Length: 267
Image (cartoon, rainbow, N blue to C red):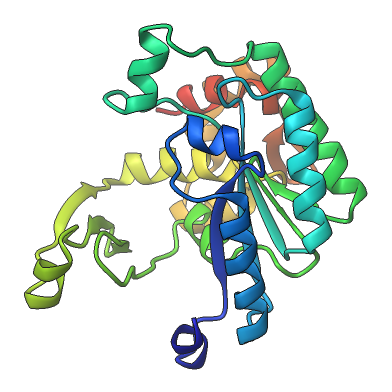
């Protein structure tokens, strides 16, 4: 961490997920909450003044009380940024297979939503700004990288398995560290055409609480948003999922709960 800090890396993101060790074990994590605390303390001692902590909700056997305890523990550490993600089961993973075989069960959807809204209210009361569906930050500590991604700005990923976006192409570095060191054979993941760029810009922009600036959309694509997506807007507006507010198209509170439905309209 000292080397990272002294070569100019100024932000760390720590994938804690929960402060309950039983929960961590149930999702296959090999660290404990105590391990995390050691790393967090060391990072502060080295000099890092911009730290993100990842938490998850909707985990197997997780209760609202578990989430409340995790939030309380983390807020007391005063990280500059907190990301809170709902669990998404990836096919082929151990956790996916266990749920499929009913060896473990996930919380009901209404409980997962209750966890989300508790998180939003609790963190906002602690002066964290909810600026993207899953992200909260203290003032002026929004993730620059994440914000640039949502605006389709280019970025370069460094290290084995890291992803980059350049010249309209997304690619990832070799996953094997020896191969990365020797020749870093890149894998092209996606090449965006004009239509895809517009669709993605809308989907990513609607992840943010501020939403899409329709003037910026015109400046970027030289076409009016409503000329391109009026049908989708009308449908989602009538469902109460999005709204036009002071030049921005953004999710309503109802839209936050049904964001996947919103995004699917632009695919």
